[in-house]
Image 1 (cartoon, rainbow, N blue to C red):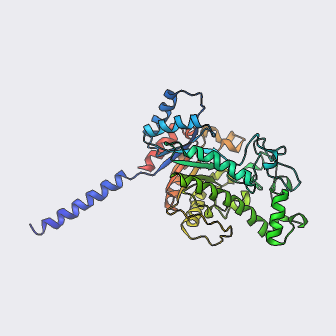
Image 2 (image 1 turned 180 degrees about the vertical axis):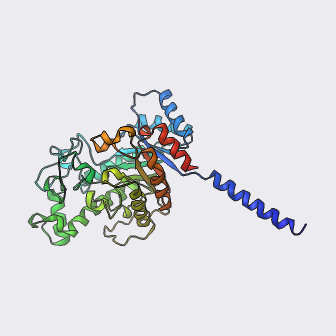
Image 3 (image 1 turned 90 degrees about the horizontal axis):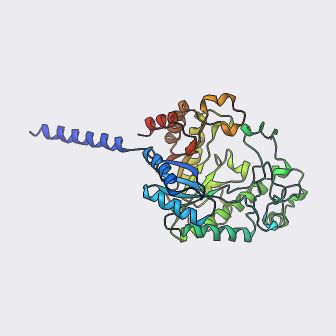
Length: 379
């Protein structure tokens, strides 16, 4: 009996361990959007599908429409899913014309947006802009069923586009071009000169000035941390959609030094096709992001005194190819993405790199074949 008891205990421990592993699943989020005109039954049907696929939470884009967000978040909670109010921040229409960024040519994004019409980006260095965004996002945080405010486009316009987009926009971006290089408004130029002694308008090649790049990274960081303070004060959390990196891409492409942001969760858009990379790259760039937010910042220079968030999470954002059978014939790179056969490498690579889960862009791009492959991995 004395010999049997230890064997029974070992067997019991083994069964418990196996049971625990079997119940462990990868946290999966999805990006999606709904029109306020959609009725509840349609939304419930879609949420039920997500629930059936084991989705942890939904990042729903519906602007700053309080009534719509109240409705969508309530329904998400009925299905036991976490709700991120996914909000476009810096590109805005119809605000005061003095609130917008100014490029190196002296043109305002108010009437000279870079690349596409909606790139009318606000200047994070304007107090009026900061207060406007804090006020608007705080109203969303007051909605009881909103768990996170998710900041999207929380950055400057891309001074360098991802390589996979160069052909689409007929550009070769081996340098920072003046038309997409922001912000050279009088306030930013004067403040930078006061801080560093450098008149950036007299510098022959501003892209070579590290202090100038850092100045703008800090302005985005300051805005994010002030927003986070306001949202955290209401007992809610903050997440953000960011470029990969931060050092390898986000910092120099869109001025996002996001490892210094005092927020709760990061959703790096690790869209490998945009960077002309294979699915293996997803794991590599995820590792960089995980290490950056788990380690103390080495470069903090923004003097922000916001309380650092403990246990920050990172969810690897994956871009899904809906028409995957015809991917090779699709010219627009924004129609590309992961094939069902590539899901395994991207997801496992992300998780081995230390990600806390994944997020799918978009949920509606997922085909039955994608879901089948994901189900094999996630359980």
